[in-house]
Image (cartoon, rainbow, N blue to C red; front, side, top):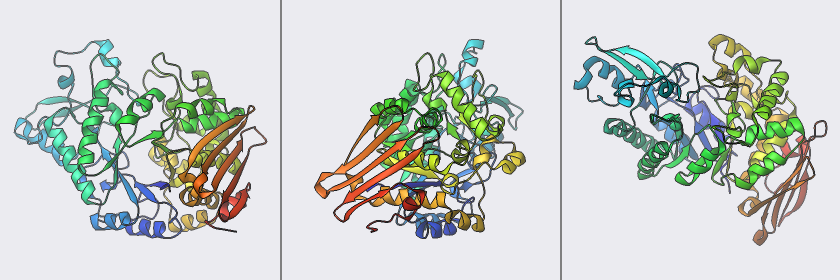
Length: 498
């Protein structure tokens, strides 16, 4: 059976590790795995935990390692290994600024001179791919007055590691050992595509990057950790890295579904089904937004969608959100379009429950591991107040749920129907069988799972035609057959239900 995974911030649903464990042992028990986004010290830094001051310590406001191990006790647990950077407030970086070459962390951090010891041309500097405006450097002053131009790919307070240096590798190995001892079973290599800087290239998913993924993957497997890699980029980059790790993300699925539901066509989805990696974690929404770049062209290579089709996906999202997604989404340097939609997936569909469940059903029927983000599970719409408070576009999809809101959402039809899909994928015997699929006409897809030895069959038929969007799930096993074609029937499904 498949362990469907829930993606959460411990502080934004539940509030602490014990409270999150109670939810997963209770109303969310259908999930066989959970990915808890950074829970290190501090979980609420400048980048919502992706700027660890101490990557080996659980923020005590959430709990401690015993509480993490309790959460992991009966389910898979994924945690982030932030491989690209640390916080400027970390012990390692502050000690290096204080003591320079005398610091045990000397060599751990990437400086301008490390990559360009003889200087760089304008063309070399502007070649680097960065998902933010501006150049990736920030000036810091050492205690002795020395000046350093350090690499800061994301935020000025996120200091890039020199992953080619033994001190940085030793740091990452230490973090991996702590995570494994804490009950973690899978590590996600966060932002690994940016980790290696290679002059003369855009330094994103280069051969040198792939070589580093193999190095860090071997270190993780030494600690009996599975490896999930996060790469937002051209779909061929996912295909290239998939054989090197245990899991990759199917980031292309979300924009392709938005294209299909917007145009009433399924041909682009069908093209992707032909080539997508089987070891994929399927997602519609994440803490970072909805990646559209993953389906688009890059570097002269055609995409699964054209640039014009990408622009149409953005335009439909803007229409559905009354223009708000355009305000919240950031255009990277040298780009003409944002690389992701900053909105909840439900919001990009205008809160259309049937269209949303069509997308969720396709996600849950594809090979791999379905992963549902907590905001998506709870039917969340854009948190415009949080965006206004922080100015970070990604915060529209990072709502903080008090207990009363969680309880109300769990009673809603959109959440109950999604939990029905989780139970279905987790428990129906057909999903242990073989997967096939077909296209009928312009707007109909059929996805099938059949386990002939157990007389089990699960068939999903979806129509993406605007105004006639629908889903139909036909189930059969040794106990009989049934059809789920309404929100209510999907919400009510349980294993061996009459």
